[in-house]
Image 1 (cartoon, rainbow, N blue to C red):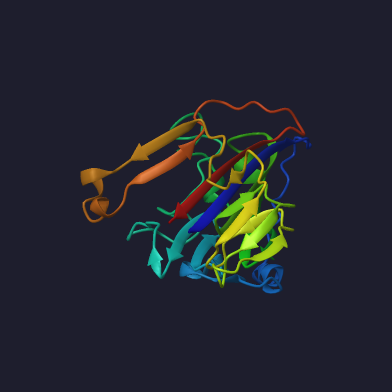
Image 2 (image 1 turned 90 degrees about the horizontal axis):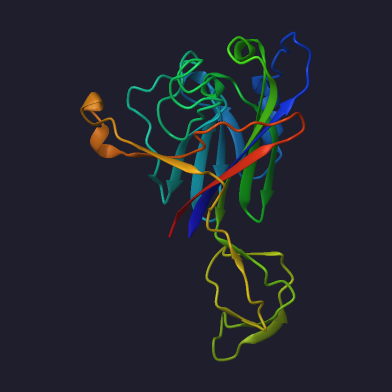
Length: 269
C-alpha cells in the first residue's frame, strides 16, 4: 500500500497592527532548502512557478506548488490520482483549479473573497526531510498585507506533506519470528522500531503483542466533508473527477499560542 499524508496546523500570533511582509524563499533559496534532502526536489513548474517534487521509494510521487500550497499531482505506478482542470491557470494571479487546494480562513462565500486567501498566496518552505525513503516537506504561510487587507489577524499556518507506505505502531520490544525469506525456518529476533513500515514483502510473527496497535489509517479531526461535482458547468471534464473534501465548516476560535491541527491521509491498496 502507498499513501500520501497531509497535516495542516494553524496558530494565531501576536503582532503589531502594522502588517508584516511575508518572508518567501527566492528561487535559489528554495532549491537549496530541499537539495540536500534525498527524494525532495525543488524545480520550476508550469508558468515558471516553483514546485516541490516528493518521490517515495514505495512507488509514489507528489507535486506541490508553492503558489497556493497546492498539491497538483499524486502518482502511483505513473498513474495520476488527482485531477487538475485542463483550463487551470498557472500564472500566480488566480488559484490553481484542481488538486488539493486550501480554503482558508473561509470556505465558500462570506465576509471575504470566495474560499479565503491561502490559495492565492505564495507559501514558503519551512523544512524538508527523508525518513526511511519517505520524503516530507513542510510549507509555511504567514500573515502579510494581502491577508491583512481582508482578515486583520496575525497567524502562522504549517502544511506538512509526505508520500509514504503504510505503518504500524506499538510492536517495539516484541519478540519476532521473521518468516522471510524462509517461512519454514523463521528467524528469531526483537522489534526495535517505534514505527514498522512496509518497504517490500513482509511476513513476520510478533509474540506477546499488545492488545492495541495503531495502524496509520488516515483518520484526522476534520468534522465535516464536502462532495462536489460541477456536472454541466464543466462539460469538458466533469465525467473525469469528483471533488471530495475534508472540512471544518464551523468557526474555530483560538487565542494566541493556541493551535489547531488536522490530518488527511490518502491511500491506495
